[in-house]
Image (tube, rainbow, N blue to C red):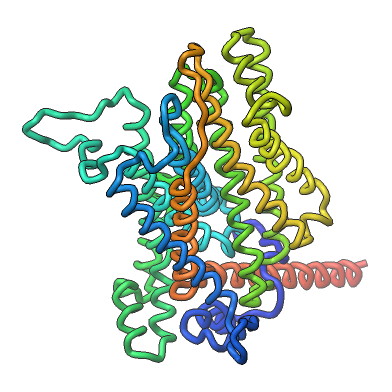
Length: 490
């Protein structure tokens, strides 16, 4: 412990003990009534509700919209979507890329910051990891249904078969299958392994027999022995090592869906870093969108402190600048290339008076390029209302980025005879709203039944802070004794 660098005191605010950390985090699950969530009046006289109930109810309602949309799609075919010729990719691929991007912050916070020994990840890594898994689940729905025959999706995997039918490994879409499935598998393993010590804590604190049995089963016999901790740390480092290249590779592979094509506006080499930076940008925005209200509802200001908020805002600002640089380079490439098709696409995007899509391009520039610049001001990074405005703006802007890249590029090709127009249908919008509902439904189930903050890592942080205080106190005392001895000698 003495070899570790000192911990920033602002990462854990207030007077805490191991028991108080158990109660603060664990009681959200085991004794939710003790947390006194803010009550909200309803139109029904005398009936009060909580923010959790409202968010969970909204998620459940939209989840049913998703189920209805999928039934409608499978029954009638993908003709219910707005996809056409030449725009074969519409809302389905837009939303696939958007959801994959949102999942990147969890892996970055969990894996990369763990390997870099960054203690500020401790308060936010757990629900960021959950967001990763749920976002990848939402993303996976779209390409599965987009094929038109989801019941034979296993053909995309290279399994031995008597038909000698193999995936087309030169296709970036097949690369997506391997990248996303690997990413989901490693993320779930990393998330579950991190939960095991906390499951044991909840098992020991639970009063009901059902909770004791349930948490006892998933804690896998954890007793907190030295052997268990040794194996846990090894497993965590191995999974973090596997996850770290995935942070870069998954969205790089997704960007190859476009960069490998010859469509105007797509075949540029900046797409891989530009997509990865955009994914981290969108992911941190979504983490903050959840963290800000949750810390207020559950009185977690001492655990998710202003230092965490400030650093996440700074990461968001840095990645946002990379993304904005990518937008500038797209314009520069089109102008510098002198290719008529590239110039026509650029004109089709930004011309306010003669383009049906310019509103999407300028919405993207305002929400992703201009509004996030508020994060340069420290006062605004500390203002929760402004921060929520910025994070919401980024989530909207990142969606419009995909809208600008995918259908708008496909509407104008090299041949005027293949020009077209794209607009989504009601079922496009319903399925997108439905995946948002699925995400909310799963996130708020997770918040109610699993610890949203890592209990044992917060205890470790507390222990290290106490060790730093003792070391500092001993150092001062030794300094006083040395001074006294020197004065006596003189």
